[in-house]
Length: 570
Image (cartoon, rainbow, N blue to C red):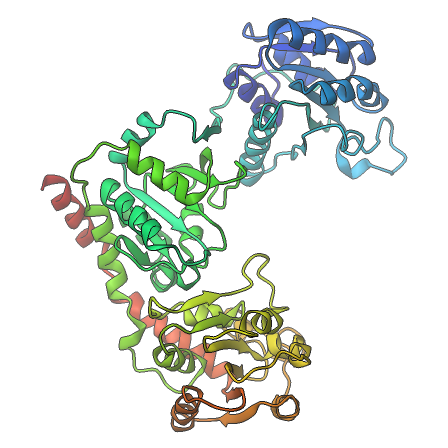
């Protein structure tokens, strides 16, 4: 029987799946659930060495003898400290030594409890990776535990071998042993460009493939062709938003659709078999729908570092490759032939139903975003401030010649104007910035610069506070919303921007907005700053009304199912 502690079960299960057989055990109370689970399973070969100092080096000897990773396991407290010499030796010899340290509940640290010390800090300089497993209380904890164990084991021989530590908090020392079988835990596998991907390519041929293509610079024509060939070969959907800077066959803009579609509709009609993530900084709410379906599809993460990154809670494989290298190899490896495009057609059918360009939109920040997107000249650059601004723009299609930027790495509102100034200075192209009031006033010193130039065009949506909270929370629920949460104000940028040499234009209606856009597209001796005044409560309601209209128009699950069946029978 195995321990009834879920984290211990997951640990033992994944060591088996990753074929780590040999475990050196040192006696103690806290690691009894781990040690007894190992010795109860005939897969493992266990060794008992009382002194942890000796046990660590004994493990090194086993690695040298068998040329494979070896685990060492001890109780909590100073027992862990006794591993330090051996772990250091393994680090400099580049040996795959897996340190499994039992621990007490982290809440007890520095609370005058017995055998409590910071066990995850001692080996920071002499290990490749350290993870502390959660004390599992729900499904998220359970998933995270499995992912973390996989990450640690994969790092044993990633880009050179070396030791890693898995710290396992356990509330009660002995625990109980009534579990006859280990749980089914997903083993994460890492793939390299040097591997044979024939079987993986064949899997893709038979599956519904959704590629989440995140924030990226524009691709060359040669690389765009590779994206198109991948989509055509596998019938894959390339999900994009404005920050992807990708406009080609097989791409589907998913932001608006993901906002109006329910999780049940997504599951019934568009759930993929395999999700491939390329780049990062995804705007689309497709990720939220995928999270609600975790475990019902495989996630293949692609990144140059080979990191285990799983924004959709279903990771199965990690490909250590640049996104375009991954696509190129899959195109070269895959079997030529006509792909089933029914899955792509379903996405296209859904997306076509959610067209914000066809809406009658009252004067609002949504209306202003659409007017700006439609009026942007070709070959310009557009920097979009994070939060509401970038979401508004994502409802509309940009001309393929326009490059877009946004501080989407950490998703903060700070620094948007400053990043724009750096991008726009000495830029031959006309450079636009769409920014909200809180983001602008937070970063208004960006204009305190010696690099202001006539090509700059800044559009400030000023609705005197944070629209986001009027949309998500609302005045009806919190009457004091503007006092602190939405940061209500009555500031204007006029004096400041004029003092910095900008031509200033105020906009309070559709007609003034139209005139301001005409002026921005003209050649001017000064940079142009347009401040658009709207009402945040009306802005929030306008967006809600728009979503409500489209929620009624999206195809029903039954109609989409018919499309899928037609595609399969074609």
